[in-house]
Amino acid sequence: LINVICHKALLITYGYNREKVDADAIKMAIADTDSTSAAAAASLHSYALRIAVISLLLISIIGVSSYFIFKLLPYVL
Image (tube, rainbow, N blue to C red; front, top):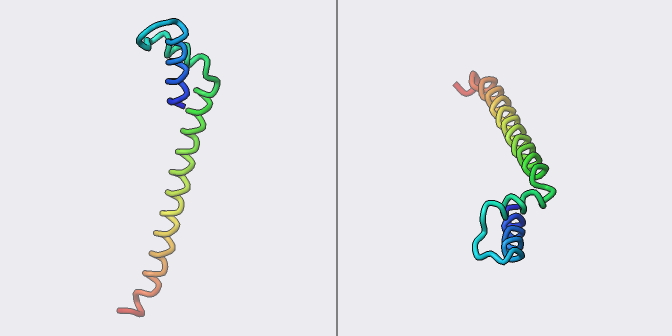
């Protein structure tokens, strides 16, 4: 997404015959890009979902392993 915005900002700057990319060109590139807010929301949702799944797996593994350890511990000692 950043590459798309940078590329559009460069094209806008070239189109206006300027030598440097300024804030106005970047704002115009962001406004021209449709998926800026949707991509950020999807990325955040995907990250939160990954964290939730990993946390649930770790809690399950710890719970199951501690159950078997404490169940078998009297036989070992």
